[in-house]
Image (cartoon, rainbow over all chains, first blue to last red; front, side, top):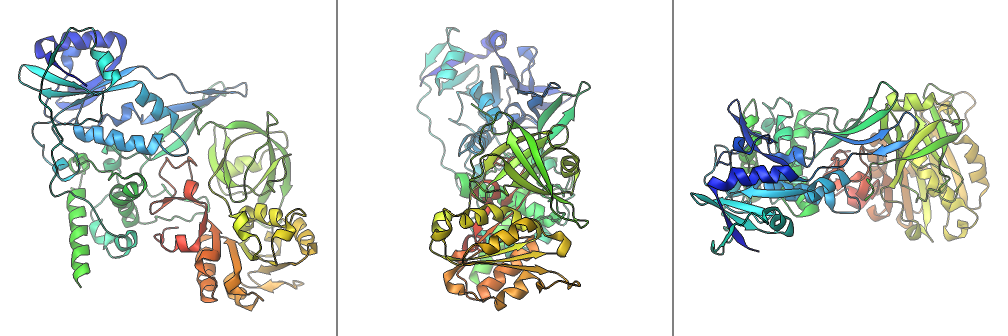
Length: 331
Length: 277
């Protein structure tokens, strides 16, 4: 696929044009906080090295998604159509997260059609980082902060223009008709990562040989880490009764950090304590998703670390787990 | 593309009160409003919805051969089951499924079988029992012994079945209650304390059991101790299976998702998984 140059002076004009045909979602700064939002004016978009407070996960997996409606006449209507969307300015860590969530939602015997439809109707436009932010550790994960090919178009800041690498027909279609110059940006390859942060240990060893109670001592169980995480995908269904008797069923984010998350109707709860739940979160990310889909479900974006009110740090927890298991392995 | 979260309209066509104790258990006979048949295999489950209340998973309790209706046996324990227990014949519910894996019927052929059920744990085993005891299939399986436990004499479900099952050749049905009661001539005690006294060739018998988590652990330990190979011990688990299709992240035990990899597990599988059920 080709690479084209998008002059920065023409960017707003191009995005305003794109906005006429697509719902445009991009990082926008509001009261000092950079976050993804539906763009009203292209001029308000901020394509910078800063990482958005939240990942754009809610635009593919909404926090509250209407999945169906039981009508008052006793029928059922499916969820509404999804708009054609351009998701712009996605950092490589968040593109990695979309790839991981796609594996969960769109592979296997069953497909989550809500996620699959949104993904199909969304054009993913990536944006490289030039340097890491505080608490980021993507260099220790499989993420190359400067390049990702898991998108339709990837933008690299080249001073007075963006080099836009086009990786799909969807990306090509988006930029067709803007008379942009095809350039030779050189063949780029993903950098080989050193010192990958992984857990390579047996499930039962991780379960039994680690002092999870100590690691979880200060955790409040507030769940912010799961809401802010670009790969966390747990959900619950909720019914809302309307005035006229119709019922809308919503699929809503849930969190494995909450005590009732696995509570059975019988009263039995397989993850009764905070340490059980924290263990689940760490092992789900670093072990279970890897066993089931081949990916570690942590992209090193650092959002859980930056947002935690008590300074829980998954990076240091994983390192400590590895240290503990190595020490134990030598005994 | 159809969403796996979309249920189909169904009707309650009959309700059977199972228990006479304070444990309120009813069996609901349900069929699709369209008249369509629901094909399932023993061990699988459905998600049942009552609009405005919610949705929950329930194991099939009827014979897969019965195409007229399905049966779900449900204890009154919360909002959804309260609402369901208040419903009358003719009421509408919504169903999606079948989901999950199933008992390996083919593999159980030509083998002796020991069924152990604790309380409502008999419900997901009933489709298997009804299949194996069916006239067409009975010759495929050897001796079938059943040890069925309940808290008290008033807590047994499917009492109507027991006499019928006892009449089938090479089949034994033993009932046990937790504490002795006047006039009770069956067994007394928990299944794991009774199983050693049964006449079982443990090495050459398949053990299939279900019950509350505490019973699952106690019975598995006992069967292993008695010499039953882990590969011949099967159980079915119940977890909080919200979506039923391996997406919502609630029912995992380690990397295994009970709603798709289970609910039927072999003990050799289960013992390599974290103790988290």
